[in-house]
Image (cartoon, rainbow, N blue to C red; front, side, top):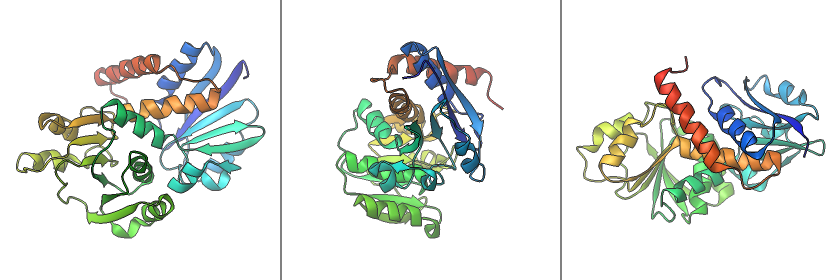
Length: 281
């Protein structure tokens, strides 16, 4: 392992990303004083050139929207999970090659387990993007053979259906805003505000999810998370997911395991608290 190395998170927009705080906390706890981790604004058009510019000083990249699918043709090797999901959120540079991984899936499984959600009887997913595809794989990992997926436009669910076929899970598409089954694990993969209708509707409904994972982490709690707590559901935040997937990224990029989860959690929570007082603009 080199004494100095570079890593970064790429996406657009990226200024809000909490990943630099988490990864830098891990480097500090691991004694990797020469390692750096930055946030770089990058869209799909700029991704090939940016990856091509990464020389031997680079350890890896974290990828967020809209790059998880776009990166696949640029990789030399892709782990089977990332190929099945149809998206990689992690690139590791090793032996002159670009290796692609998906840490969203194990991160989601770990975040759910931490909240006591290990074997849900059924599940509903909101959204059909890359994170929804990862959610399908996570549900498979906890023993489910399929899920209901609520989408705003079924014509744009092709990537999700392709991922479901590769993963060997069944998907039932439903219109966005359909009633969620009582006791379901509800996984919301949509942006902040889009799932607020569920919170508004919850008081008039008798059926409620038994557990809720909302991938939003700021602002928190979301109206959905607040309502879920009130009706007694187990609640998993986007921060929990981000933390656990980042920990796996740290292990892949540094070769050191386990990642220092308590240090990463403390710094991440501190940064989120700071943003409540001085929001990122």
